[in-house]
Image (cartoon, rainbow, N blue to C red; front, side, top):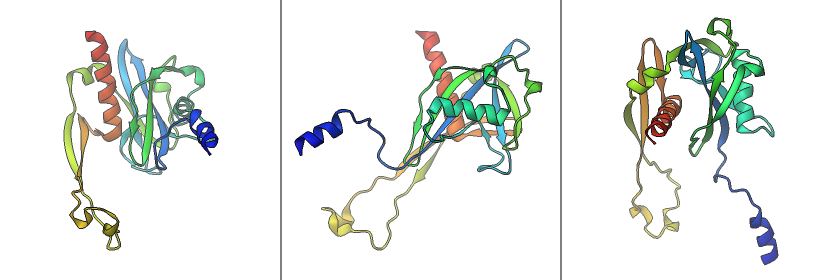
Length: 204
């Protein structure tokens, strides 16, 4: 038995416990008249969260790496060839009980903004100058997720029973104020972290 345990654990690749869905997104930079912009998508009515602002991205397919998924989704959603997408690398990722989302940063090259014609999953694309996000920090608002128990919850299997002190979880959500657009949640969180990393590097 010990030998089986050793072989099982010795080369095991640890994963989050649970059945999180895996996603990857691409934070695309694009030059417009010598100014660096960030390109965003407004989600169409045929996909989940219609009308929301997002980066190109989606769920991983079979045997696909996070980076491969981010690039593939960007190609599909923006109707771009692979040689128009340059990936610089990856920033911090988001892990929740239901989702794991990796974010890659790079540049859209040799494709003027007016030449990009997204697919049916995207209602429209728009850009914001990168400098905006250095000047305009996000508003951060909180929501509380409260614990509720079903009638058959087995309190008798806990030492403290019904007296157990559960902690309500507070979630902090960033919001950027954009004219005629919405930028909040995971997309805003990635945008905020990207700016923080550049600022930290600039100060080092």
